[in-house]
Image 1: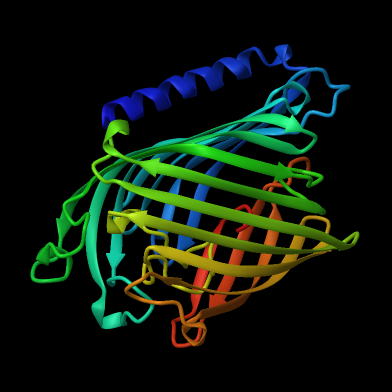
Image 2: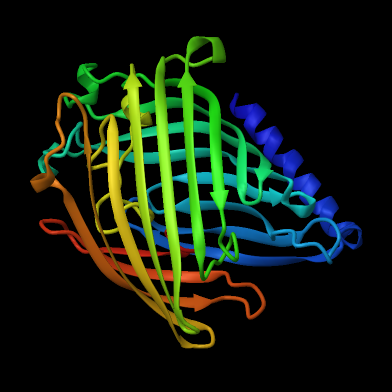
Length: 361
């Protein structure tokens, strides 16, 4: 399957190159930004690589078709992680269809603390894994900004190294030997934002249900519900307020590596990604973004949430709170591709720094 993922990625690169050569077939010229990748997160340390972002519109330029985006990149981190990936979000003419997804191959170092919201730093152990990944969404516009479609997820998780005499080595956690997850199901999608890539007002909402079972090639059988809601409010010409409610609920024999988790550069910045994971997750976060100069901006953000399950019940007084500030620099005058520097903290946790691209939500 790894070879298949790499072949598919090469084919997509070939298709993308062909689009560059034939961009006169697009009614709106394709804009491509090539950039060296340099980023930092607590989970990867420094990362170096090369990326490309292509923005374009399909169909007649007189029609109100949303802007599409294709991203490709490869990177190596100082934690000896390697990744090669491509993601896409493509609207057909007049927004009748939406195709979104990701394909890639990853070699990663991860950290595991156990399950639940009461783990300690002393529980931390390291493991290494490689896996191909495929994410695919297809949505058909049903009415105005409302879409109905399907979602497919695939990971083939091979754990290549674990620490001896620790929790994963005991074999008590489902998935400690790796395995394949493959899930398919329906989804609904609503988006009234003024821009799907860099909004200043509007609402985004999606909900999906997937079943992972052996008939789809999965080694594990479980069900997954996801709800993601975002509301964008323009305060004035230079500032925007955004809030996001996000939840995941899983039922069945879920491997630990497929469980939802908080932290990282997207969900509750300030927490180490993977420290808190369990069958269910619920959080709410908000961010205030404002312009300082034409290409410079700043943000302030905060959020609260938690993971929980039947064995580790939800208790509000155990919720995780995170907050921080950040700076933004628009890399291209024409395209709003932001370089993001965030400094975040959560009580009883170390200060976290994130240097990456794009917004968290």
